Image (cartoon, rainbow, N blue to C red; front, side):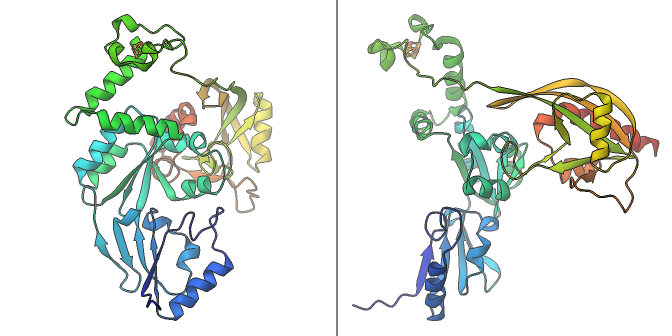
Length: 370
Ligand code: SF4
């Protein structure tokens, strides 16, 4: 029997898009031919509106965009959202309260944009070490310091909340705990779980089963596996890397740069730095190699930042440089930024927090002098 197809709704990731997030020529031809014959082509994706693949948008005949798992439908012809079903403020807040004790990538989609906690964003490599999905998340998510505050400030536009867990086992444990959580006191339940792990059910066979409120229902105790459970995979040895941070200041700005789109803190802004512990004269030379003309230099205290697999032991220098002229060969792609730009346009990862505090005080002094 011939069917009269009016509309095709398509998921993107794992359906229309290949593993490397592209659309094959064959898929393009099929969808554009369908559109030419009068079939309406539409997405039906979990992506927020602002993260719908430009390649999909370039297909001829795509009219509707159903995004955020169905929370919104955008009509490209009328150029407006024609359907929106949002989470209530209470629902979104409740999900975050319940997820508090769990190690998960937490994000919320508000009016077509996905925001993630800065803490999650900086640990992305623990969830997705590499590949196109990691690149997609880095390019499409906006890191923010206070997700609960964003929920409170955007109560009418909360499209969806997402929690991604590092392993399927962690996700399943969280699901079970969510199901058991008392509706009226999720905070107390989370706190109890955390305290149980910190004070009673200690790893390496030191568990205090005699004092434990769960002793009667505990699988490990019943089966004599207290020494084996919870099983912890062997922690990877953490590498240590020395780095010298260069605060390159000129008048009331400092020079920052963008990291490569792969590896640690991929694609984020950073303070220029050099591997190893430089002497003051080497630090000056490094600034000159960046095409800058260094003047005064001051050694800064040491600081440390621990990532999951690497530890940075940092030292630093504050180097005042002359304002570069138009002939400056900016081969490092340095970006001059004042206090406000650092706060609003170029957020610097917390790994540099110690030196960012120094920058803030140095730039404030420079501003006051003006
Ligand atoms: S009874 Fe179970 S949960 Fe309680 S301390 Fe012992 S092993 Fe841990």
